[in-house]
View 1 (cartoon, helix red, strand yellow):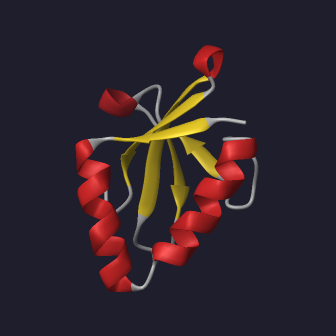
View 2 (cartoon, one colour):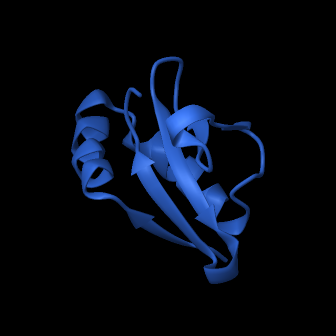
Length: 84
């Protein structure tokens, strides 16, 4: 099982998710990610450029969860959970 850590920006994003009514959807995705950060659905996408090494999963059509996986420590670092 993976442990999830949130960046300070992701902590702020959590409040916005709640206001937008997307908190439950994000929790579902995060709970699945604890078991396997690369499991689908929703499908993950490897990011490129300055976010190389990070992945994203869609919360809905507009919002994404952006994260990094550190497999040797079994940690998922969540960078953002809002519009990217």
